[in-house]
Amino acid sequence: MQTTRPRITWKVLPMAQVAIFKEIFDQVRKDLDCELFYSELKRHNVSHYIYYLATDNIHIVLENDNTVLIKGLKKVVNVKFSRNTHHLIETSYDRLKSREITFQQYRENLAKAGVFRWVTNIHEHKRYYYTFDNSLLFTESIQNTTQIFPR
Image (cartoon, rainbow, N blue to C red):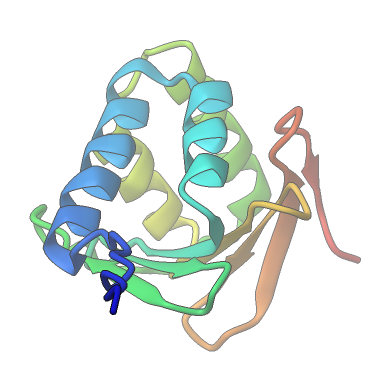
């Protein structure tokens, strides 16, 4: 009688996933290569991620609905509200792209503008910026990073 060997399936362990995603996020903060960043997220079956500015935590949701949490190591940033929100967000992003400011400074500027978190939907190619009370501040296309402000 011939016995069949059990089929072995490999699964990435949660800690290994955290390390992989941490590296992906650290890399994009360093080199600002968004095209490679989104390509890597798609390759790892990321559906969307939620970035919390105040804590620097990232909640990643995979296509199979599993989640990965990357705990932020940076200092906590106070989220405030500014009257000139859209201008501050736009100029901060432009300054980040041109490397005039660091990601940490960008994060602090968005917090000053009242952004509490953003949700990036990889398949829709959209990023949604929210305030602390869950109001949508604006939406931006992540394909060409042009911002679309709500009415």
